[in-house]
Image (cartoon, rainbow, N blue to C red; front, side):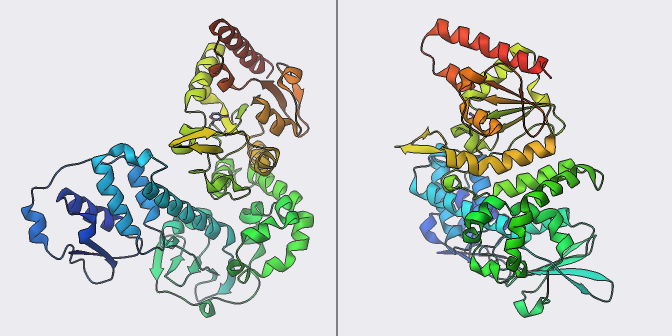
Length: 459
Ligand code: URA
């Protein structure tokens, strides 16, 4: 039996180095015990055995390492062993990592998703309270994460609150930022954090975006936020007021981000994207691998909206990279529109599918899912303010216009959008992929290219 002692609960490098050596020496997963402790790593108990075995060289897919890096942060003590078991499997059969029906792959993907959600919850629900210490003002927050995410997440708070001195206290460790360096301290208790109201201005600017009036009205947000977070949030008593003012506040916040503080739209877009990564506004996040957010220059004058990410996009995390994306790229090139100069996003940002054996079959988002995702689309438009928004297909057209429309009735002409800017409707490129008749497919493709040219010209 080999005992591997990792130095911390989130010691990914330690796990990776040990796993690499063990797998290189063909040590079976059943022979390894993983533990965490602060005694120096007596790495494998019996290193001589490892050294005497001729190590094998191997490579693992990037997707495995990405998964492992996230899963390591999970609180399940079995995570190290499960990952090592999958590693042994992936060395033998690298494609196994893509088999989402494989029970072990699925289990680990579920764990990664839980970690991502916890990362989001910390970003959304941490509240700072102001104290005066001997140097000046310090902002202190108390948070109880479910997984070992604090160290990983600390960088996010440094980026967002670089000019403040702050501390986040948690039962596992505390992190302190003094505007220059990030330091770690010992575990804390809630009693170590100051009482009192959180500092409005600090969180308002950044966090107001989580107060979506639709969610508050239906109580969905209250459901989403576990009670354990509630008790740390005195401002939840203000829910009524937030409902009343939320929409104006959100809009004001995004608009402020456009103009204030150097008009840091890139920063506001990054914050929005980070938030979207933890989106639980509808049930689609449960099945999907990740949120696929929009991409492209944030000063783009044209925004293209698809339906939802497909199988490839869901795995890679980028919009329009699969077969429909290739069709889109080709048509854009033929229309003389540079894809790199436009912003590309989707009406719905999680992949909806049905499992058939090992295959994941695309399934159309319904009205509720499109509406739930409207929030992100609206925020993207508020930030980018595109002069022209092109809806690819009926789902995108519905998101853009705000009601169900047919492609035939709306295609190929300028539509003045209520919130400003022009809109344009055309077909979805995947329609072209489904046409069995070659001559018809060519005609439809030519019309699609004409539509794209028309939208660019109408700018
Ligand atoms: N189809 C879409 O609508 N969007 C994508 O990102 C990919 C395929």
